[in-house]
Every structure is written in C-alpha cells, then in structure tokens.
Image (cartoon, rainbow, N blue to C red; front, top):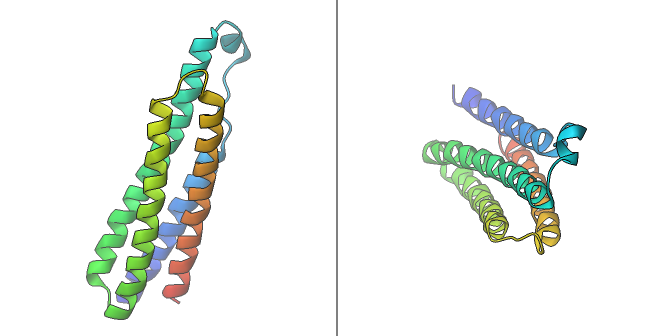
Length: 143
C-alpha cells in the first residue's frame, strides 16, 4: 500500500503541475465589442484582475501541493523525509515569489502596470517551471 500511496502522490503532483501550466498559459480573451467600449482605466482594472487571478490560482495549486507534501513527510522514512523537506522548502520559496508579485499587483497603477504585468507573468512562468521540476524530482524519488 505504501508504494501505491507514493505513486498516487507522484501522479497527483504531475497532474496538478500540468493543470497549472496549461490553465495559466491559456490566453484570456474577451469579445471584441466589449473591449472597444472600455476606458483605459477599465481595461487596466480588468487586465490586473486577470493577472491577479492567474497568480491566485497558482498560489492555490502550490498550497494544495504543500498540504499533500506535508502529509507525506509525516509518513515518510528518514531518507525520503529529507528529500521531501527540500522539495517543501522549494515550494515555499515559489509561493513567496507569487506572494511578492501579488503585492506588486495590488500596489500597481496604470503608470506602472506594464512593468508589473511583465514581472508577474515572468514570475508565474518561472514558478510553473520550478513546480514541474519539483514534480519530476519526486517522480525520481519514488522510482
């Protein structure tokens, strides 16, 4: 049963990472008629909300993985526990990166938005890549 739990965890980690990557990479489009009638401020607010929501979704994915990982750490052998702790710390660092970007988004203005949007999207991309690497690391751990 232990082997099944480990395999299940690895598959869940990979599945969540895949969903996070594909969901956050999906373009957020709106009907053309709606965008032409909006003011610059409305467009800014909408785009800011979209980027914020992408990062919130990513943060939620990380939180779920941290919860799962903490459960596994409590059950793991000492050797496995040490490697899982490393992955746990890596996930926490990535969560902190997302939190920093969310704070920047909250404090953004129309004047600073272009730079903040680019930074937030780069952070999201980097966090998703690290998330995937962590999943691959666990896959190797349970082989």
